[in-house]
Image 1 (cartoon, rainbow, N blue to C red):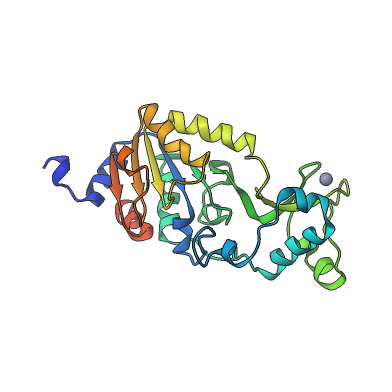
Image 2 (image 1 turned 30 degrees about the vertical axis):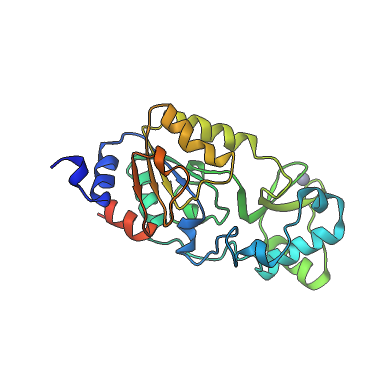
Amino acid sequence: MSASTLSPRARLAEMIRDARRIVVFTGAGVSTESGIPDFRSPGGVWSKMKPIYFQDFVAREDQRREAWNRVFSGTAGWTGRAPNAGHFAVARLVAQGKASTVITQNVDNLHQDSGIPASQVIELHGNASYATCLSCGLRHEFDEFREGFLERGEIPVCRDCGEIVKSATISFGQSMPEGPMERAREETLAADLFLVLGSSLVVYPAAGFPTMAKEAGAKLVIVNREATDQDPLADLVVHDEIGPVMAAVVPAS
Ligand code: ZN
């Protein structure tokens, strides 16, 4: 049977079987199936509340207070959900040694929650499930601050240096994180199959990775509910739900 007569799922399964080093690139579409809204879509977070720019967070106490209000009220809905079939299928690819890394635009920690070691998840937009000190970088868990903030209105500061602490997401007005961007480039260039799951591929520089992979000789697959501008570049495009597709092509053994 020639490749063209195979179904998209069968072709994807074949491409995964033949690949030696897959890099999985994920966007909001992977997590919408877990009930996390796509923050860019109509009805998403940014249509309901104003983003707090990084510069304002640093400069203004009222903005920090508002940001922490959002964290502890769960307004943004970025965390607190469970991984779905798509996350677990990706975790199997990593556990099998097929995928070297997951590069994600998501901040929900669901790839780690699905069992992938944090060292194999490259987060381009940070992580909304914990906080870091803006001065010394020390990690803090939200639970350290919950009672002080909710009961006494204390705005979190670093337990080590006393400086400003912020959720570990990359905010509007904040530059892309250099370390993760560099690692993502290296992984992309080393991949022989670049698998995009649930990203509309419109937010740059993140959306530049598929082209980078193609130019370096990798095969490109895009699985997304809707068409993307980069579909014409891809060796295979699957317009479908991510969880069911990935569960079918990477079955649990
Ligand atoms: Zn500190």
